Amino acid sequence: MTETGTRAPAWRVGTLAVHAGFEPDAETGSVSPPIYQTSTFAQDGVGAPRGGWEYARTGNPTRARLERAIAELEGAARAFAYGSGSAATAMVGQLVLPGEEIVIADDVYGGTFRFFERVLAPTGVATRYVDLSRDPEGALGEVCTDRTRMVWVETPSNPLLKLVDIAATARTLASRTGARGERPLLVVDNTFATPLSQRPIRLGADIVVHSATKYLAGHSDVVSGAAVTSREDLAARLGFLQNAVGAVPGPLDCFLVLRGLRTLALRVDRHASNALRVARALAERPDVAEVRYPGLAEGPHAHPQAALAAAQMRYPGGMISFAPAARGGRSAEERARRFAEATAIFALAESLGGVESLVELPAAMTHAAAAGSALEVPAALVRLSVGIEDPDDLVEDVVRALDEA
Image 1 (cartoon, rainbow, N blue to C red):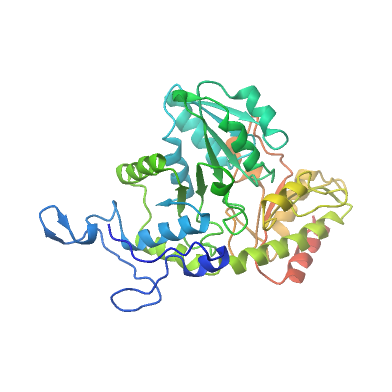
Image 2 (cartoon, one colour; image 1 turned 60 degrees about the horizontal axis):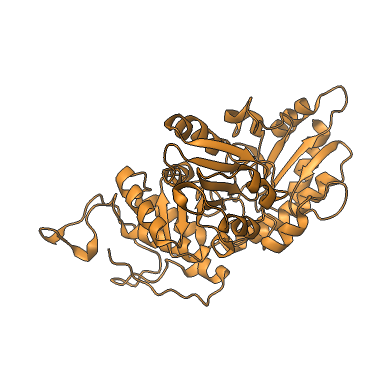
């Protein structure tokens, strides 16, 4: 398939966010990419597709632009777009065969946990969960075996906002021999950080996954996912799976994610500055028992890995988790529920990373699948996705809702 455009590796990531995949249309000069809303393409002869385009599941020019853009943002060779973040997870999970195992950081999105435990595990793929946030070298030394095919981490993690030292994890795995006599693959879910904040491929990761629904698209109007790699062997397999399984996004979905990328640098900066304001306001409250935010470096609620956040991430992110304290005869869980139902700007909804602020209780919503497991989320934990609204209004909304809770 023909792809147009010239890579500009010297450009900084903020410039790439605006221009990657957005070269003017060769035929018309349109500065907005065409939406090729088609399921198939006319061929010039039998077995001679024009420009390599033959069937939209196999490839679509709008999707190719998006894949090229995400690859350039991540500093990687190839990217593959899927119909959702969960589809991206499933495709990467297909790289692990029955009899092999995945080592997983002990805090991940509930849908990821559900896929590993209820889809992969019944096929004979073993799953092992371990805390990689403190000492990845020691932890991996204890759990990696000659069956380990993959190590999967989220950093920051969902919803506890743990961090994993990507470079240290990659160095540790470089000296390990796992399944098939090979080094275990390192997969990093970069959804919370985005490539504007950290680029795991450059830190030693083999594959990066995204729920592009979240920060990449940024407007809560599309569901999409992506997997990124610079390894030719993995790219070949992921490309095959993308076509064979067919969990691909439509061209309009690809266009919407592309459109979102153009403001990603502005949004990530605003999300982070707003989140720091809200986190500091929460940390000052005596009726808040715990605040988790990688940008809090001082005080009783300082993040234990704030130094790693400063070293590994350009921005500490737009996500905050906190737990209210019991007060006035109400338990912490009661107050968490009342808070989530009392906010005016923060909409009570699942998902994250959109321009609007959202609030949810993971234990009852996004992470309900982990109930009763070692990854069960505390019932009183509140997760905030801090949007790009005026920070004073956001702080006032949080303070008022806590007063009422």
